[in-house]
Image (cartoon, rainbow, N blue to C red; front, top):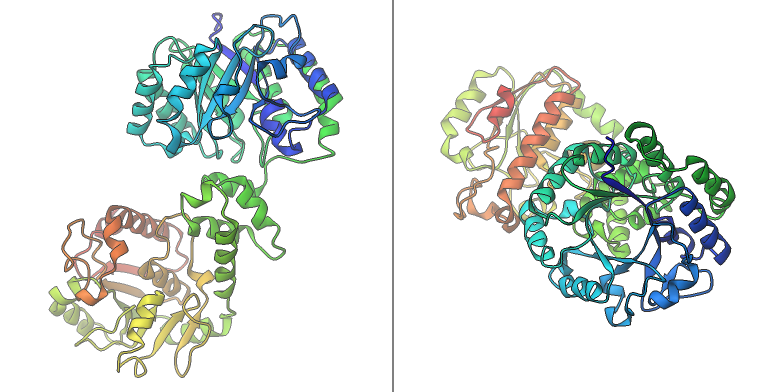
Length: 542
């Protein structure tokens, strides 16, 4: 690749600044800028534009005049930038471009601010600065939302529109998809940027792939930091990407100058703060979660990595992108309260269930519609155990009711048959059972990775796998209807829940995926079949 199409942007003094309250000290700021110039880095991001938060030795500025003290008179062709968070900077504070300070402003904004930021960007450009558009969390946008944003941004004709992997969640396929969308719709004069975080150890590889996929299509900018300095797992290391571009693409960055920056400044900075890959930050990447959530949870003395994974999964996609400590605390407490020692319980259940043919009666509408088929299936088995899920069916004798849903448990507790029926109860519902009932740990049955991960039928199947049953026949696991009829989903209308109506497609998708995962990971030779019609029967046929 002889025709250079990419520029390297080092943002250590900005993205790395979060770790030290933005206070590098004047000597370090000047020294790092000098070193980056010597290394021939194309773009140097020297800090933040903010309305407040200034201080001696901080990389925070009110305007161009304020930042001028750190900009050398001879920029040697290097572009200097600052980042302005739309919610933290009044563009009225920005002075006219003089050429003596930074040359460009990178406008950073959340998805909800995407319409308001257009005038912000236009004003920056009118004042003579180049504009970079930096939408937070590009994976949080649908394809249509990306295209709509670009249509608005094209009016600005920015110097660069960046793909920002805020939570370090991207894989190569994600980057290819997003790049293709932007490349096909962004005004031809604009560059495309890439800013990634290293939660899943993908930053360097993704940056290389970004350089390859963009060649011949679009001029680009790659964001990096020296030694990968940045919150949590950190960023793409400048020295790694520069070395790749020198060796493989014919660029002329001075790697020795970058190593001098590491020796002279970064080693000392590492005595004051830390960053880099960890299992916890991998989990943050999996769930597109803000690293502050991870910091909060890892301070819990007894927390395990899988506990963090469960809590992030549980609080939901939107809350985990910011940080909501009260919600984290309550979810953590609830999770702890669901932990019980159930080893003896499981041993007792094994004595009852091992080697048996089990019939599961889930509460789907087919339990009523196909009653004869269910009864015929049960009659053909020599000594079956029948277990209903979260309800006591009328006209069908069951050996046990499995309760994994607290609302169902509370409802059926008022039924006259409740005390007469043997129950298997999950510990997220109650810590105490009586008589012949069994209490099983929620943590034994739970598995993260899905939005609707607490499906009772899937969790019961996981339990039966541990009990070494011979076979499982499932009735009433119909799948959720996408129509609006209240009679579509359950054996009777008293079982309907409003949240089912909110996103039945996602519910069905998650259950299919969980069932596939179970079939792939199950430990026993348990055979599974569907007795009644089910949207998930195709999973068993794969």
